Image 1 (tube, rainbow, N blue to C red):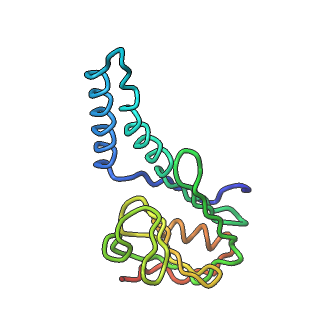
Image 2: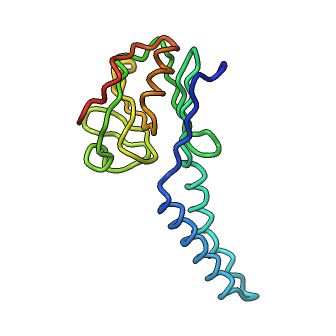
Length: 162
C-alpha cells in the first residue's frame, strides 16, 4: 500500500481485555496448581486457544491509501479485506446497532450488508462490487474525508440513522 491518507486502529472494548486476562490467568493458575510429574501440560491448551483467537482478531486496523482501503484484523494482519478506491460506491457515515443489525461485533453478516467492527455504533457504509459493507470507525467523518481525497464515490457527511 502506498502512503496512508488515514490509519485507524480500533481495539475491542475494555471489558473484553479483562475477560481474556481472567480466562488465561485462571487456566494458568489451574495448570500450576495441578502440575505433577504425570504431566498435565494439556490443560494449557484452552489458554493458548484464547490467546490465539484474541491475537488473530484484535485490533482492527483501517488504512486508506490513494489506491485502496484495507481492513486488517489482529496482530498478524489476517483476515484482511482490500477495497480498491475505484470500486467503492456511495460511501456515507452511518450509525448502527451491532447487536440488532449484525448479531454482535467483529466480522459479521447482517440482513443487507457485511460489517467489520471492533466496538462502537458508528462507521462508514459503502457499496463494493454489488455488496454493501459497513466498516466501524471511531471517527467516520475523517474516514470519509480520506476516501474522498483518494477519489472514492462519497455521499455527504451526515450520518444515516438505521
